[in-house]
Image 1 (cartoon, rainbow, N blue to C red):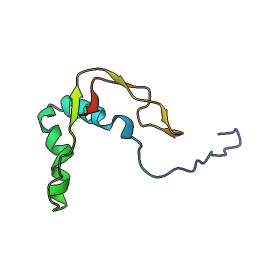
Image 2: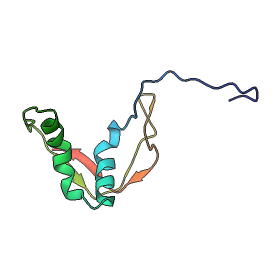
Image 3: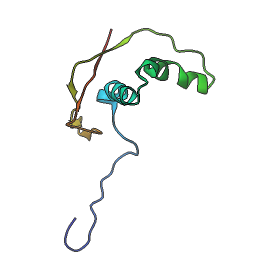
Length: 94
């Protein structure tokens, strides 16, 4: 912003980009709320139930481990939500 009161405008899509560490962020949030045990169904079942869709077919499994991971600041020229922060969980597909 300049001293003339001009505002910088960036062309961006609506929403928050969390894809690189979404599972890790959700694990931290659910753990902090004391409901880590509900994370699996939240991620894999509740959305389909709400939308009255058949349960998802599980082809791969996402495994969380208590290993610190850092959220990247930028991915493919897109700024990531909470970029640069360290989360107590990491996730990997099996």
